[in-house]
Image (cartoon, rainbow, N blue to C red; front, side, top):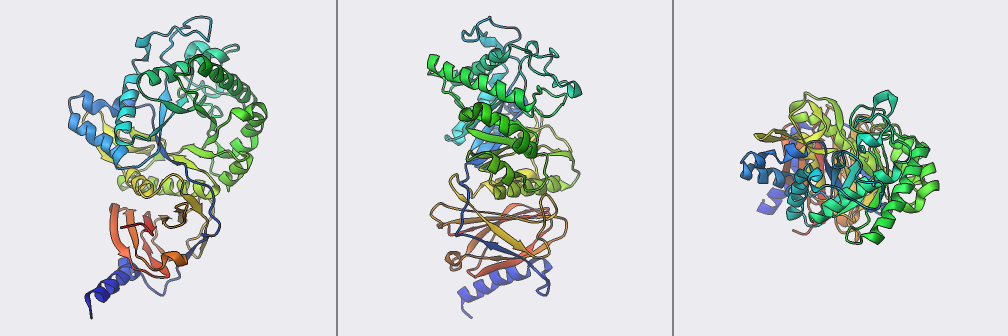
Length: 474
């Protein structure tokens, strides 16, 4: 028996027999339709929201080496394409003047941005093509009905009449400040979840109010780029609501009627996970790109490393891309240690940081993907095939535009292991497949290559993410 044959046999046994798989069990079959590629991937993203000073606390506390390691974990190890920034309500504590086209802001009012600028420059030093997005959570209190940063809860605090251009000026001032610091904001959202009556920093709008406000902000920004060409006009992402279901049915129709020519990207969060919502939203978007601009797990998760929350991330990403989304944003890079699955990394202020299972799975997901890859339709048949936002096997596949490289993500969003059989397209049957896995016991580990074959058959542990890359040059 020669060495090559022995190695091939060993690898075959690994993929057929690992983790006690019983060959008599009924697998879930996964098939790929390479003949009908769908939307092109624009990229993956994450936010620096709420805890910007937390993110920079290691360096500020004299731990420069640890700070650089954190930035490496965020921007070197995870190849994201977008960084979402928080426009706070601080830089105009009172009206600068009565002319929204003439700015008289005090530079010291932007002191809070020092953390944001540091984070952005750390990102650029590791990923020069990083694209920055900014979201206004709330205008200053003096512009609002409750005179406070809070969203007002059920009282639904909103913008005072005749403050539309003042708010537009407020956002432009942030863009201009960041530009002076060497950070160009390419995308802008004028609101964050205006459909949710919460008490966090925010303001509420109904669909008609939002459409009218969006139009006034868009035309203001169009005028300002004429007056200040040194500050590029950002592309506008809207409506950035909590529910992608309501986004399609209630928010987009008035927005596109009122200001359709100014809407560059349809953005929505994904906290209302009813049905084939992304397909519905893509249809309503009328050929505009559709992004999931935020998602996380809010509830407590006591599982080891928050592996349960990680599985929910994989489910949400798979459903968004299979439904037609072109970009997907995890909510936040860094939070203080907590039981909720809001962030990828937990940082004890100025001391140490912990990489969660959410982080490792997101790293594994992002690593082989490149903007421009096309979504490949998948068909699942068998015991672990399941409906929307329910436990089971979730699969999302992407191919390079020339069809020569294929990436398949498979996630077992359930406690029980999943026996699967992945049928490989003909062009990918003659070379081995690289493989990585995150599971309750592993963190984006590299597995032995799956040997050349017409299909890959194996067992995916419960709460596990398995990634195959085929056709990649060695």
